[in-house]
Length: 278
Ligand code: MG
Image 1: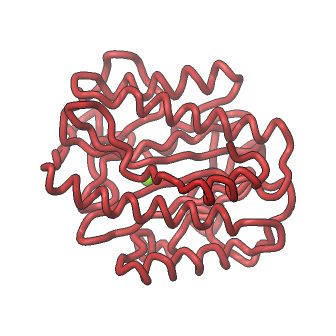
Image 2 (image 1 turned 180 degrees about the horizontal axis):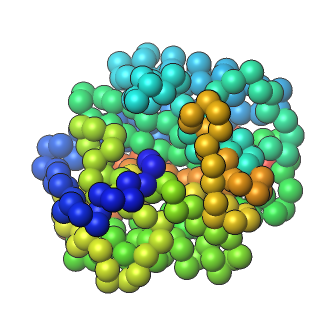
């Protein structure tokens, strides 16, 4: 989500803690959207349009009795955000034909039984270069490191620091204009979760909080701009960007990644056959 520059400075965030029953419902929406993204990952390839991926996502979501949360959200017209190469987030699915060597970020959300699940990944199309593979890998590592900070008693700054320090250690930069967010009955709840920060600073994390954590990592500079469509965010320098997101519940025993799906050996094999996917 777009960072609200004034909000955190002048208003205490209104964080809605979730009961166990609510987290159980969020697990269902999280697992659904996780499975949708996994399925999209297996179908993406050179020669496919990003609009076809959007249509496949919408069908899967509706067939499961859920609603594509993004569709109509503040006027966004599609079920997924489809951001290719230098596009950071919020790209419009289109007639663009994915080609060998592209990197393709898919962000998707579902509402099931009143609760939202939100997840994203950057997917290599066909065979991509080593530099791009590394950008994707480091972005996924940033997300893993952020999730490791999701314990009661830690602070939002610990999450931001984990992401920022790892990305910058690899010479990448962290997007400041867009941040992660609390999530629940609404896709965007308080607090905002920046991908930068200082350890021990910011809001204290409590049991029952649910966060959508989403590092956006640029190969070049951190600066972004929005295209004329009013949505698609691109890097100002035209260098590629990667995005990775999970919905995470804070429990007494640490983080539970609600959108992480366990793959069967057959699916794992299929995914391993796709270039650049670990
Ligand atoms: Mg999100």
